[in-house]
Length: 211
Image (spheres, rainbow, N blue to C red):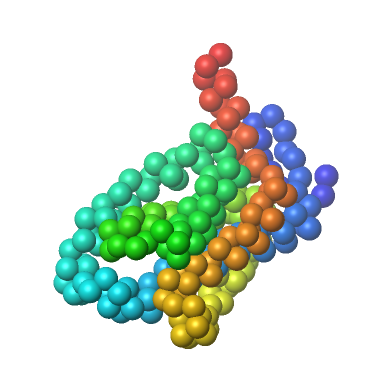
C-alpha cells in the first residue's frame, strides 16, 4: 500500500495514486472554471440582453425571481450523487452548464426562451458538485491544499478576458456560448474519472440495509 492514495470502502482500503489525484484536481478545476465563468459573465452580458429583448432592469429582476425558483430544489441534483454516483452526476453538471450556455446562442429568439436556459445555468452553478470528488478522494493531510488548487484554477479571470473579445465580433450570446469549448474539454477528461470510495461505501451500506 502506498501512502499517496486513499479511498475508503467498508471492507477494504483502495489506493489512488498521485497521478490520479493530479488528474482529478485538473479535471475538477476545469469544471469549477466553467462554473465560475458562467456565474461572473452574467453581469457583463445582462445589459446587452436587456437591450436585445427591450426589457427594463426591474422587469427582468421580477422574472428572474420567478425563473430561479427551481434553484431552491438544488438538493435534488446534489442528492442524485448519492444515487447514481459522483461520476455520473458530474457528467450531468457539465452537460447542464455547457450545453445550456451553447443553447443560448441557438435557441433564444425571445426573452422567455433565454430565461429557460439562464435558469438551467444558474441551477447548475449553485450546486458546487465539483467540490465533492476531490474532498472525498484526497488524503486528509493534503485535502485542503488540493481543494485550494481547484479553487485557484476556477479563479482564472476568463469572465474579464473573453467577453470584450467575443461580444464585438460574435455578439453577446456567444459570451455564454464560448463555454461549450470548456465543456468539451471536460467531457474529454470525464471518462478517466473513477467513482469515489465514499460512494462505494454508501452503496455497500444501502446493500447491507436491504439484506
